[in-house]
Image (cartoon, rainbow, N blue to C red; front, side, top):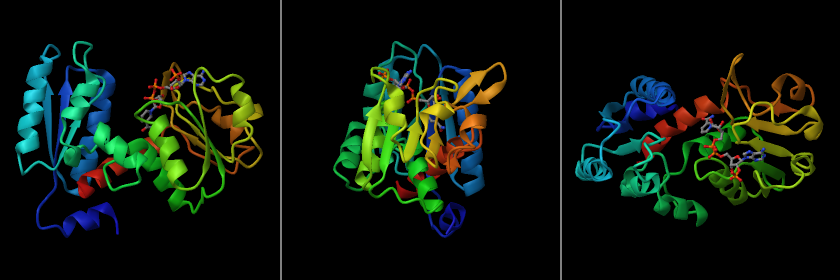
Length: 257
Ligand code: NAP
């Protein structure tokens, strides 16, 4: 069943609140995509925009009242936050059951322990993409580049939980190509245009490009798509690949919440 069909069968419409602090242009784009998804699927949706100079205490107070509001099922605090606010503290202020971004310590622990919870949308989107294309990860060597709490680290845990043998690389990795050349599945979550070139990938590898980079030529990923696409068996484009899956999985998390 599609998400839209599942939501149409519910007696109570799921409601999500997105909190934005300030007016970051990239955040405005991401919030617009989330609004469109919510409208399409049939969710209730509220965008709460707070001033750039809102205090950490005032923001936590807002989150607390949404935590207690039974008509609100999902709360998402759009990152990045201004530097005077501790992002980790804010992510943990959201009730884990309403944490549709899956970024609280409790949900990270649940992912680690393979229990039910709400998990970060981008790596969830990658797992869903692999599933929909009937790509089994069991026994495969998956190499993940990037170790952020948002993408790389949960990605490596999800692949491990699904039975892949995982290597996690980052900026301190010596000889990155040594690892990327061994990957059956390569997931790149760095934020550096064309970091991965065709000489760095194995023949017929499966390439998932998570990176989104704004360049003078427009949006591009972390993989040199035009050259790598002739060598691999699957590759995700940027834009139009993992980004759309991320928004879809947010919708899924709200349904689960
Ligand atoms: P991040 O927090 O900046 O993390 C980047 C990671 O890449 C870090 O772990 C860093 O290593 C590693 N790294 C940096 N330079 C490297 C290099 N030369 N070689 C190997 N590793 C390197 O970024 P993020 O939030 O994870 O996002 C990563 C990218 O994905 C960005 O382009 C972002 O826009 C994109 N993104 C896309 C989606 C989507 O829906 N498609 C969602 C979220 C993010 P250290 O830890 O050692 O610094």
